[in-house]
Length: 350
Image 1: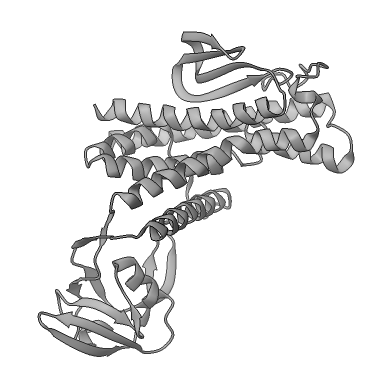
Image 2 (image 1 turned 135 degrees about the horizontal axis):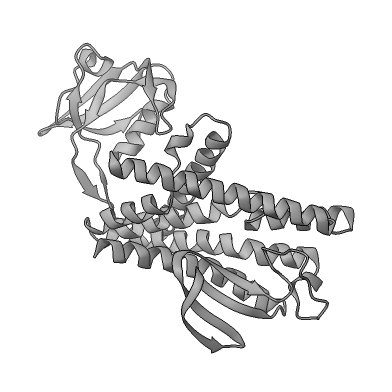
């Protein structure tokens, strides 16, 4: 059941991505020949709005086939008014941006739904206190609840963690312990830790772990929109940084995941309830949006680069260069997909 849920989620995110392209293309008068969810041989299709809507056998992507645009043959153009390639470069860029933009919008609404559903987050309740750490020396104890740091109210573990991370000097920490309130002075110590990218970094630490207790965020209507915006921004920043570090070699290639990882993570999330599915769906949607903006000729970002070149130079790239770059882009994309698949299989075997 989990695998069916994950495939449904992935297909839905791909659908909305392609729908963004489709709606923008139709807005600018471009004839859309095919709207496909999946690649390869079609297994179902119907005609609507002069477009063939189809489902193909390989559910790992999708595409919108516009008149005058052919990814596998960029020289196959059309001079008709309803052709993609006869539109101004800035219109083509909007059509190309509409797909990734749809993914960010869908992620926002998924986080909005999570916000209205009263999400569960870690409470600022202390679990383990490391012996001889700054927290231990200051008198912090297990099951203490941190309520304020430097007179700023603390509601979640993340807020507490960020306050410590950004601190300078001694912290004025207010904690509740049973029916009593205690004020402690804690001076964080710079320590080396491993971040989510498995990099060694230096940051202020006080030597505590979470007790694992959760609280329900009781958000107002306006706070829910702020929550959705913040989560979408954080997810986008995380994916952008991940891609940057992968390209720079700061994150090893073995960390790259593929379609199997996406399906497995979503399937696992489905066992934890629909809220977890929505959370990972939002993250995957942002991932799709970011990755499609990469300047690889086979992706939206690559086509955007071609159109920016045409806007700046007032001439389109030569057909020979366009063909070579497109083939190179497909080669790179297929190579990355193969690497992700290889890493996925290795993880499953391990």
